[in-house]
Structures are given as C-alpha cells and as structure tokens.
Image 1 (cartoon, rainbow, N blue to C red):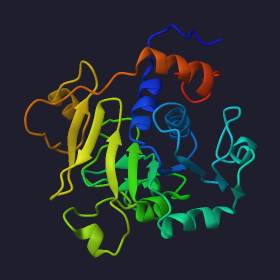
Image 2: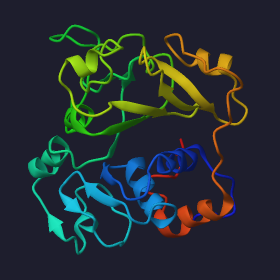
Image 3: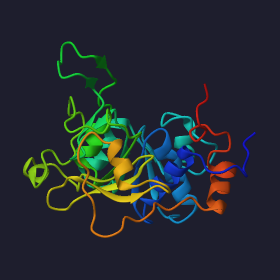
Image 4: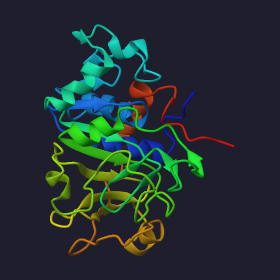
Length: 263
C-alpha cells in the first residue's frame, strides 16, 4: 500500500512536469512509462479535452485500470477506434499528433537521441541497445517532442554515438533543411530541471531548475556546455499536494511507474 502522505519522489516529480507540458485540446502520443502517467494525469487535471493516442493503436480509451504498457488491453478500453501500429504512426506523418515523449540512452546539445548503441563502431559497439522502435517516427514527424531521462555526463553528451531519433541535427535550420516535419524537441525533462532550445542556435538551454539546484551544479551533470537564459533562472514547479494525492490514488495507485526502485 502506498503512503499517500509521503513527500513526492523524483519519478512523481518528473511525471508532474511532463504532464505540465501537455495543453488542453491537443493530440498526445503516449508511450510506456512516465509519458503514460503524464497523459492520464493531465487528462484528470488541467487538460480534460486531450486525445490520447497509444503507440499500439488505441485511440482515446475510456479511463480504466493503469495500463502496464502501450500493449495492455486497457489502452483499447471502449476506444472509438483501434488501429494497427503502422496506421498509428501514420497519424504523425499526416499532422494529427501535437506532442510526443521520448526517452534516451544519450542526448546531445541539439536534442538528437541515441537508443541504438554505446560506441561509434557500428559492427562492434560497446553496448547494443533496442534501437528505434517508433522513436524516429515521432521525432521526425510529431509537431512537438519532449525528451525525458536521467541526466549524467554520460547521457547528456556533446555528440551522440548514433543518431537514432533526430532532434535539431547540427543546430540552426539544419532540421528544416533536411525536410523533417514539426518543431522537433521543445523540452528536455530530467532530475535537474527543464531545458528548452535557444531559438536561433537550437542548443540546449536551461529553462528552470529543480529546488536546491544551481546552474553550476546542473552543468556538472552535463557533458557539454549548457546555455544559460538571461536573468535569474526560475525554480521548476513542485507537484502540489492535491495533485500528488490524485496521482497516488487514481492515476498510478499501485506505483507501477512512479515507485522508486530499491536495492
């Protein structure tokens, strides 16, 4: 049984911050994990009119139990439409997805994402990972993309070992010149705070920092030089108590995705 009175843990904070990136009346492409929590939380709070599109093809199912993945039957519960995955991704190509979320093994200063391999030798990598799945479709075609993951110098790198999912390529207008659709990454969310991308250079920039964090401290967790906004850096909003209670009692009551792992 979850302690609904305990302070928010980092995963619950991340879920709340991700949910805050979602605006009402938008079409939200939902993947497994914290993006799923964020979409459901947003729909129950500030964005009741969003359309949730699950990666496996479920379109805006009626609320039910917490899905264990995008392949869970709860993602299809009384959906008006259930499509094959290929058609689900085709929604992005045809402009029907407003925002999508992506995780990463590496991300660089321009928001390019690697989920393929660690090490640049394609035939002999240090670590081989899962690859794209639907990530490249979303990063190339969705109107807006929000990236989420743990921030360390090994994950936030100057240049990714392999571009699985394109961000702003080499910065500037290179993404647009490549013929890719949408705005690309608009935000990165980590335990350090929230980052955006400077409009001209498209380099990653601090937008807000978690309570207790400073710019210099966040820089220590980054393998490239972060851009700093003008003036004071605002604090990332902390999850309010009523929304934290809602998350624990209605969104993820068994803590499937928001319970911190233990040794």
